[in-house]
View 1 (cartoon, rainbow, N blue to C red):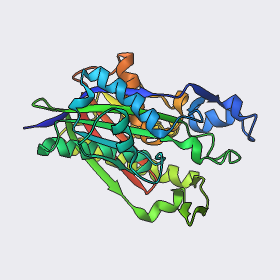
View 2: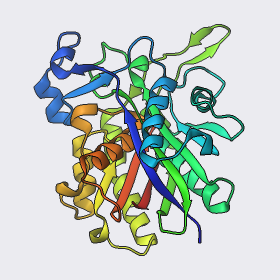
View 3: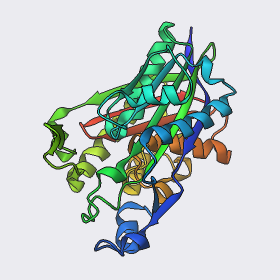
View 4: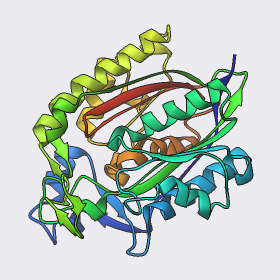
Length: 319
């Protein structure tokens, strides 16, 4: 049986940081208000000349180096993003060009903060079917570009970044099981409704969010999908070494861990330093923990996240 195994991880964070104290100078908020409600202390902001593809390429290069794989060996590129470089072509093809790769399939996946779950599940299917042997899966977002910096309910939550993994065909277990879900009935809770028409932006180009509504839905949905994917793989929660969740809000992460009866010492936490980096969140947290030496080969990982749509999912991995 062919599995898709993670061969290497990589990430990239812009140099500029924006702390809660910095935010308090431009919007009515405070470090105490943000920290108490979200767990976030600071976040990274892309430079004016940094595009989503630039962040994605830097993360990809780190992942390729960690995997010991040359860019020319990649035969599939999937980029999860909600903040592409342009309307089209896909950011994945721009990444492809910047990495000096040509010929292989390259496309974007848009599932907001659940994007990486959708992207890695898609790449897994390609590898298991024999349609690809080495895939580059990237989550990258520059949400600072769609923030209303006068709205303290949203601008304090998000940051920019990118994370990537190289997947390779293997006889050894890798991605064990995944489950993806979506329900468009809840799209109004989290959206950026603006669109380009006739040379102008129609509607608001800024992120709109019903915070309490998102929190209520996310807590239930994430707990259920995490529980389901473990059970469907024939495992139990105590066999999970690490929960690598979407880094949206500390209280959501705590609630999911509690539901699975996992101690917080088994949860990878980067929300305090990165904020919510949308599709980049999970691969960023994964790479951080791998490079810290916490996640090691042979560990069983549960990746899970939820985003606008609503779209959500979980992936069980033998690292």
